[in-house]
Every structure is written in C-alpha cells, then in structure tokens.
Image (cartoon, rainbow, N blue to C red; front, side, top):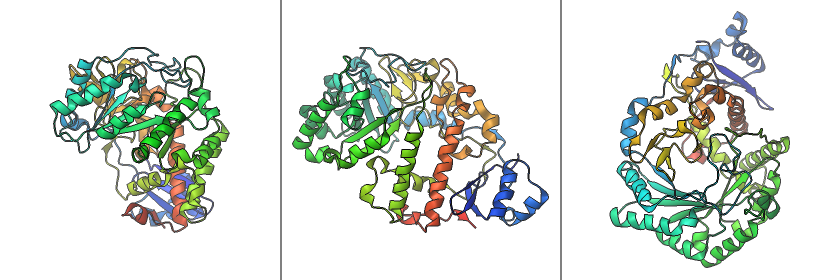
Length: 475
C-alpha cells in the first residue's frame, strides 16, 4: 500500500504527519513541497531524493496495513464476563422539561420520543446483579442513574442503593446522577453526600440562553428554578457543592462567547468543574450546522489557553469551559510514537461495546452507551435476561470494516473519533452514514496537531505537564 501522510503548517513551520510511524516530522519548505507531492500521489524521483534523509530513518514508507480488524475482537467474551467498568441504568423515561434540542424530542431518526415509562424495582435489581457479576475485574466500578429526569424516581434510586448495600456489603462502587437541577433539593443532596454520589447538573449558561432551549412543557424557562436550588445547596453543603459538575450544551445559533462570559464572572460556580458539548449530528432529521461565529469563538478560546500556557496571557482570563484543553493536547502528544503500524488493526473511535459504559433502558435492553438511539434495533447489544449478543458487539467493534477502503487510505486512521453511532442505520450498520462525518474528524485531528506544534515551537515542555514525555517532532 502507498505512503499515507498529511502535510500541514503553522505560521512559522512546515510539518508532515507520517501515519505509518505515527510521527510528526518538521520539514523545510522544499521538503514540504516534496511531501505534498507524495501525499497527492504525484511524487517524482527528485522529490524522493530530497526526502532521503527521512526514508533512511524509516519514515515515509509504504503502509504495512493490510486488513481492518480490532485487536480486542478475539477477547470479547472474556472482557464482557468480568471487565465492565460502568453501567448506566435508565431509571425512568419521564422528564419534567421539554428541551428544544432533546434527543427524545422527535428530531432524530431511530430514536424514541418522550414517554412516562419507568423501570420497575425488580428489573433495576436485575440490572445491578448483571453488572456486579461482570465487573469483578474493574478497578473503579460505577453505576449511573439516568432519565428522562432520574430524580423523578428518587425513592427507586434509594431502593437500588439500599439493595446494593445489603446484598453486596463492602462494595467499592461509586454512583453518578445527571439531573436538570429543577427538583434537586437539600434532602437529596444530604443523601448524595452520605452515599458519595457524584452529581452533574445541566446548565446552559446565562438566563436568556438557558431558557431559550431548556424549557418546561408550557414554554417557560427553567433557569431561575435551577439557580435557586443551586444557591440553597451551596449554602447548606459548601464542601460537597464544590464537587458538583456543571454541563453545558451549546446549540446552534447560541453565542458561545456569552456562555464563556457567564461562567467567567458568575461566582456561584467559581470552584466547580464546567464542561460543554455540542449537539449530536448523527441521524438528525433536519439539517443542523454551527455557524462561523461558533467556530471563530472556539478558536479564539483555544488560542487564549495556548497563550496562557506560554505565559503570554493571564490564566484568569481564559474560559473555564476549556479547562481540559491542554490536558487533551497532552494526551494526544503522549500517544504519538515512532512505531510501525501493524498489518492488522482498526481505526480509532469505537470503544469496546458493553465495557466502557453500557446503557440499559427501562425494558432491560443493553446499548453501548446512553448516546446511541434507543429506537434503533442495530444498537441493541443484548438484554439483562439473556446477556450480550457477541455477534452484534463484534460487528460494532469492527465498524471500520464498513468503510475499509476509505479507512485504509486515510491519514487520520489512528485518531479517528467516529464511534458506532455515526453508522446507525436503524436496522443495520451503514458505511454510507459513517463516511459523511470523516471530514469533520480530520479537521479536528489536524487542529490538534497544529496546536501541539505551536506549543513545541515555543519551547513548551509537555513532560512537565504530564510527568513523563518524549520528543516526537523530528528535524
């Protein structure tokens, strides 16, 4: 197979990503031009002569990749029998809000719509037993309670935890609950503190932006109610309150800069972890896109973080929404290495379905996680009464086979982030759907590499930030 590389540049330097060795090479302008010809399949003998110093070191070689197959495929049965690290139980489907962008709003193909159904206690206990029997090798096993709005079933959640305490005495489980915050009260927070339950609250920034999407059924906003509850909790449980995680959904046509400003000046959440996500574009019925202002604001915020790391900008002026940006860059940097690609491998992206955080709906059906469509038959990978369907799990794990030809020639193969949700065709896994999202993934990978190179050009030391590091940019 031909040489697979990607050329890119920063304002100061030229670079080439060599997929075969998973390395970033620093090159001069002439070498960059030669590499560009290699990338486009138009390289001449003069080009290869100019690049000889790299080829002699083992770079820019033809790819060894011959077959797409995930290395964990042969161990699936073993993993699923004892290595599940986290499970998410859909304790109910009912919710007291009707958020405009909700995945259950009817705007997504293959997804269920709002309902008032809930999981009965006996089935919830079966979910717990199912998990406990298959998590014996997990280091930090965790159970999450999910909705709808899970706090509409507070008594059932408490009964589940009581069941675990009684039947599995001495367990080392942790718990998580994601809530819209509208019915979160001091009584439950006291219980959560006692039981070491991690709480995540959905809050979309300032009132005018939050209330635009996170509404009650009558159209009224939920911001004031949530903030009132938050203040009560902060005053009554100041230590525990600092552990609460706030999650923001940035919808299209929402000004990201206003959200940044809100979290920068609001002292109520000054000590809390804040994160944000965008809406899923998988299987959405109507065309959805983020405007140029969103991407410009995002770029501006990441640039401020980079300048801050280089001592050229005040850390206090960077956005809390981007607190993990450098950590993510460091993880990417640490993954770069001078290693030849295997003849048999799989693109990055899919987790091992059923291991990371399987999701169980009110009927007991198992899905890879809570982010996939519950109305899609192909996403069901088992049931708590019958266990996992190994054939379906293996197909999901090897979803790259659907686009094997395209993947084998793709420069961002190793860092592909497309999970199986991108291939959800309802009753089948679809390569056609998967390939539609490739361009966005490649742009994300390219931006990450540029940011890393910008930091390295300014003598940034990833080693001191990650405790151990290695040189990956070659001259």
